[in-house]
Amino acid sequence: MTFDKTTELSVLESAAKSGDPDALCELGWRFKRGLGVARDGKRAFESFLRAAESDDPAGINHVGLCYSDGVGVKRDEATACRYYRKAAERGFAPAQNNLGWMYLTGSGVKKSYGAAVRWFRKASEQGHAEALNNLAYCFQHGFGVPKNQEEANRCYQEAANAGLVEAAVNLANNYMSGVGCKADYSRAAELLEKAAAAGLAIAQNNLAHLYFHGLGVERNYERAFALYQSAAEQGCGEAYTPLADCYEQGLGVTQNLDLAARYYQGAARLGVAYAARKYEELSSRPSAKSKIGAFLSIIDDETERLELSVGAALEVKDAQERIAAKKEELRKRKEEEGE
Image (cartoon, rainbow, N blue to C red):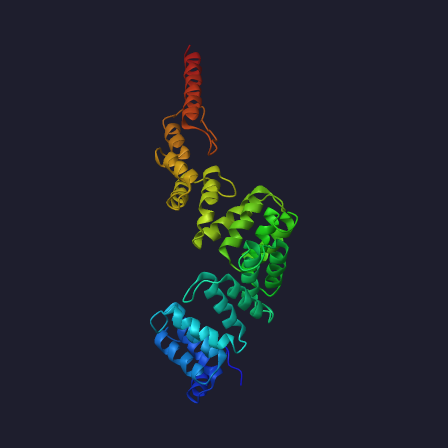
């Protein structure tokens, strides 16, 4: 019997009680993620461990993940590696990828790019998307293999075809910068559209950049703003500065200098020097819109109402001079009428 997220909990628990490893893994996953049950790391670990004790490679891999993440058990990367290796040697692709990552990062095992590539290759040969993405990363940077940008892009493309949106973003970035291929903003936009629609924040940020500057797509400030905003709401720091620019200049959204300052501040906290300067500039004075509104309020004439439309980049000093000139014009007109 196959068990998945649609299986009734009572059926799942009954099968798990009888020791079915697939049921134990599905039940453990639900406890780990809090899917239809209260999140419980300890019960998740116990379910995975029971599956592993029956020599089930998925259960063994899940136990390794629990040790890696400290779910239901004390974090122990060396023990995680032992479990990953046990499942990887049984040909389980997810475990092969996980073991490769441990070698790549030197987590729980001595760092070895060569060993990382070997395990990524084994998993990739089974079509494992994350392993393909990781293998592409190794080719792009020359980790454990000679640097080969074209092969990196081939692996990214294969992983993207398998539905891994992170790989689509990596490939799109290479199309944007012409790494291992001819620069092609239109192709980059196609890849980013899919990843952005899946809710990946960095994809939304990068796609917004293309819409903002009209690269590979027709320039659309409204679309750019919506994408920057969505990315920023997910905590994507790269989106803070361009989103602040949109608010400051009124591009794709109604001008709002207060919100501009807020996002510049967020970017400044991430070390963006330009954002720090902009935040200081905006926070040191009232927003241009607010200040000009205050000047306008002092003008009260029954025969003419003064209206000024000022963009985000207009300096307040210039606005003051324009208002003073208009006031002087009104004063002279009154004097002439009174003569």
